[in-house]
Figure 1 (cartoon, one colour):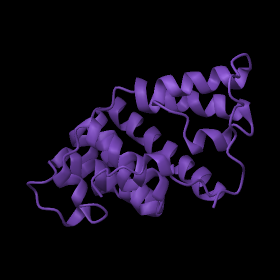
Figure 2 (spheres, helix red, strand yellow):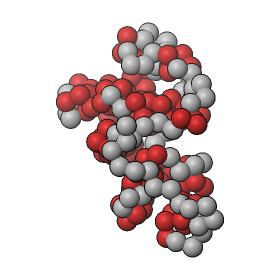
Figure 3 (spheres, helix red, strand yellow):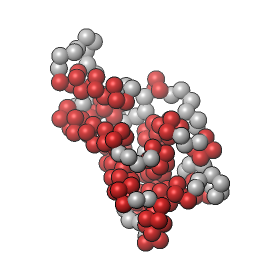
Figure 4 (cartoon, helix red, strand yellow):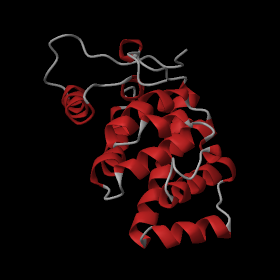
Length: 186
């Protein structure tokens, strides 16, 4: 149950800063989700949140498949149902296969034919950071052998971003949108 109200604009509202921000979010994300509506209780915070979200989701050159695999590993490890719900759909759109999605949350048990070595390195890094806030030397060395320095920075920022999202979502009790419950593959 949400701990704060989901802010909604009165029908026909178009002149406020919040209305403009909601239009921007809808254009970028397709709709204004409960996460955005909860953060709209403090519009300046929502605007700042969207700046980083835009970088992580739209401007970072990190592969969308690697990003979405990392987000899912993080969401499952941190037990964030809202992110699992939204990012299974996002992962599929990014090119993550149904076979890969079916392995979560036990992706580490999947055969070598399900995830390539780069995907496994990203998943292991994401999982370790989510569970311990650190990655062991072997995991980081494998990641370094697979990704460029800039990709590692973007991946780490992405993981940190979704840790922040986990705190916001779970802390405020934000729930998945009921009208978006069309099957997303599980």
